[in-house]
Amino acid sequence: QAPGDVVDLADFARLAQQRLEPGVWDFIAGAAGDERTLAANRAAFDRLHLVPRVLTGSARPAAETRVLGRTWAAPLGIAPTAYHTLVNPDGEVATAAAAGSAGLPFVVSTFAGRSFEDIAKAASAPLWLQVYCFRDRSTTRRLIERAVQAGFDALVLTVDAPRLGRRQRDIRNGFRLPIGVSAANIAGTDGRSPSDHALDEFDAGLDWSVVGWLRSISPLPILLKGILHPADARRAVDVGVSGLLVSNHGGRQLDGVPATVDVLPAIAAEVAGAVPVLLDGGVRRGIDILISLALGADAVLVGRPVLHGLAVGNQEGVQQVLDILVDEMLDAMLLCGTATVADAGPQLLLERGLSPS
Ligand code: FNR
Image 1 (tube, rainbow, N blue to C red):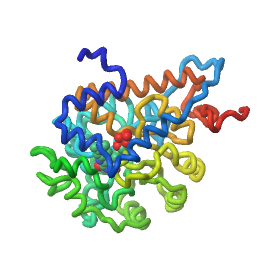
Image 2 (spheres, rainbow, N blue to C red):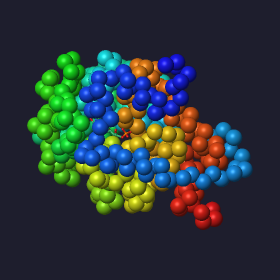
Image 3 (cartoon, rainbow, N blue to C red):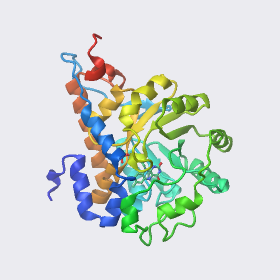
Image 4 (tube, rainbow, N blue to C red):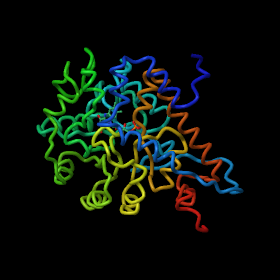
């Protein structure tokens, strides 16, 4: 495979699949149940169409945007995924370095395979900590204190996982973490499957008071990851969160929930600009980013493609994945006559945008 053959994210996925153990590939690629939601995330993007505006004079579109007071090179970041060391021994350290070179944020999983301190040393763009809240609050608290110490910028509490979804590929494969791969920032995961660990330790009884608890133990802004209902978006804004991530966990939690891009407009309308609204799930093309912006997102995150880049080409591979997405987005902006991220509005969409504007 010559490097010139790697043109898009699908190429990275194909090469990663060739390179990885089948069980590891399935752990990354798979989702819950029949994987209906996994498919829906992609199908929903495929159904949406951009309608360019012509002769706008915007020859050099600008990708930069600001989120929570920091500049991002593009409205794109890296979603939290567990155990980057499954695909590459450098793991999250390489991912953080790539994110820094691209000027894009990296949301580090509670189940990172490298220590927060090592990841922070390699980083130069914003790092956020994804938080799974354990029944043992002191474990959760220690994680957060370490991330604060290491210079992380925000907490992203995952709210769609009182327990892990039923991932049938992992069940059939009897998937276990290989020797040497573990959650570097928490004790007790060596040799156990992620789901066994999570089942034992996750607090399945979380309620809205957890936001106040997080605020009481850390000065960092709090975002909620896994919001799909406009009423929950409203509630989140009312309790004072700093941002929302519209996510169905890449189809890995409850199978049968809607595609994220399908619920985005109602959530963006409910939030009405009060806090940033981010989206993840199925973003594989620059046009997917532009469509998400047009439907009301402030930025999007990508999960699996980053692991594919890391598996295929280490730090360089992750950088290429991010560069491809940003280049594709800039191309789409130029071809749509959209000069800036702020200009990407509903006028770009056929379903919603044909009234004069
Ligand atoms: C995830 N995701 C995830 N989310 C989270 O909050 N904490 C985590 O530790 C993980 N771990 C994880 C591992 C793997 C292998 C995958 C594929 C996903 C979900 C992730 O943050 C994100 O919501 C989805 O991956 C986004 O969808 P795409 O971009 O993968 O389609």
